[in-house]
Length: 261
Image (cartoon, rainbow, N blue to C red):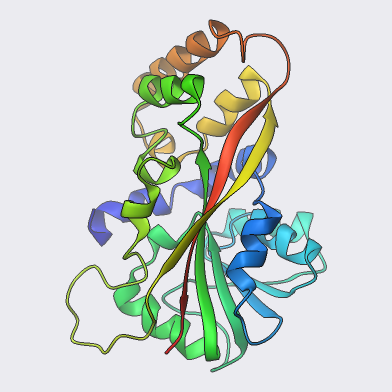
């Protein structure tokens, strides 16, 4: 997918900012600790912070956090839920911070939206020497039978290749690199990837609401969107694991980290 194709998807979340904040999961603490482990200090930029799902985890772990988010509606929700966090309007391609001002840049379910030909040099600019760039993705564990069935029923607009352990590693292995040859020298070292157990307490209705906040669902024509959500509701109603009351959605948090050269 090129940048022109990505733009409508990446800019779709503001229309669902309140639902995003209510229904999207946080991140496994062990995953965030692993992402930050090699960082030379505690200063962390949450880039493409959305409504602050990753920001809140970073705060809970004691990091010195700055959040940067381009969408005004998402930024409003972040500021409402985390008023003590410094939250700035900006993007991965234009980060409103000085050179060398952070020890780590983390991106929660956001790094695939970055134009790394522009964002790569910007991220390297704000990172201290030996600083860390890490992308985190919350994955539905399709090694569990009913989750695999849900992924098939939902379609790739709702649960795509980056959303399951089966394919996220291949999908993200080079995500820190420009999508096209730019002639710019490499700014980051070799990637490391790891997965960490996670889960989210859901009901059938709240899981449908979560899936409805996916970018592919938000830009889908309304008739098709409603048909897809109805199909998902029917699947969940027919599964013993999800038909009655609350359940834990089996998840993993996947992490890719690289060091600034």
